[in-house]
Image 1 (cartoon, helix red, strand yellow):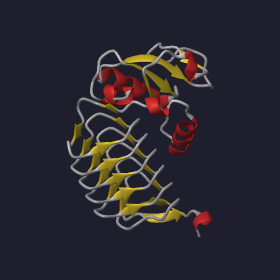
Image 2 (cartoon, rainbow, N blue to C red):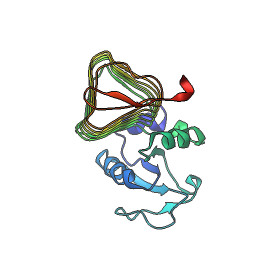
Image 3 (tube, helix red, strand yellow):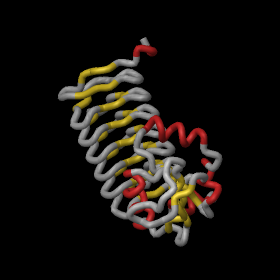
Length: 218
């Protein structure tokens, strides 16, 4: 059993290093503490002060931190993916699940995923690695959420839908049953997605319409 899986199952005194010291890192710090773990420190090459509000040190290089597991506290999906792919310690990514979350025993959650407060993941859903399931989102049965996605607060992913790798679903968005969202997509806050979304597209509105397409895919 690797350290990431041990931490996910609630082992005590696991020291977590956090990559990124911006706004999302504050919520991740709360998540780490709620899971019964401790902050080993933060890594951010743009900062050299103490992390606020935790007071933990910020280092330029993660190798300077004595840690057992780590997590990526970056909300932007493109940056999150890039940092993950450049990281030398992906085998130590820690899955963090808030105690208030409800995860079906028949669902799967990938390494490095952050499951925030009041999230529900239903039976036979699959969430891949390095995903943010943000506060109060719902991932219904048979959904698939690709690696590096950010599913924002209050998002409803209906049964059997899928979200492709490195996509963002904005706060309060609804994806109807069986709908496929491609890779690298952005779904605007409050959108209702009723039809498949091609790779790289940005959609918004009720019902959601493409407002920006990926011209490279045409």
